[in-house]
Length: 302
Image 1 (spheres, one colour):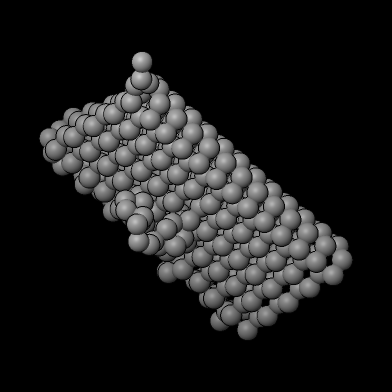
Image 2 (cartoon, rainbow, N blue to C red):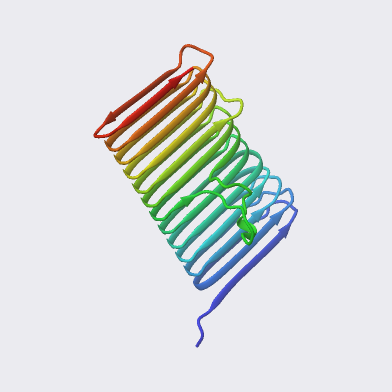
């Protein structure tokens, strides 16, 4: 007797008090949910098995909520919400998971993605105000970064960077544990906080904060081999700190504006730190501390 191939499709257009849910156990499950209009959207997709694919889109206003849980192998998830008080959570456990979440417009957005396994990918993008984004990946070859290219279909996020936030009072957090991790964050607005923590080998982290910036913070923590960290801030009263523990780490930090602070801590062999400040105020601070052999530190203040 052939194994069941489950498939669930739900579509609700406009209206108020909308609710959609899909629960599937087995193999080769596929769930597609679409809700449009101005209504109290709530979506749920839970899939346990292998070869799961989840697509959830809630368009325009107003109070959208989304939850996708997938446990197994070869899971793919996409959550798209436009406008309103949005909240999206994606949890995937297994091998070869891909999570893409995108929230455009609206206010009070929150986005979280948890992935456990090998070769996980997470792309997140938020545009609006009061956004919060968190990505946690545990495994090997994890990547937080968006793709743009032919054949990418609905997980094309128009940017080659992960966790993009455009608004005010945004917070972004990325934690990766494993090998070959890559993380990137870009924030535009006022009063942002960005932090990246990587534990493993061959990690790369890049954070960029630009726009009308005031009192922004960028933190990077790396523990392992051959880590690379880059932080760029433009504005005033910004704070950037990079800590690396391991071998052959490279840190590059740059601040453009007034009254910035740069701190770099490296412990290991063959580390290199470069810090550059181009500020119009005299209260800028740059500090580099290195422990080990063959370390090089270069600091420029103008």
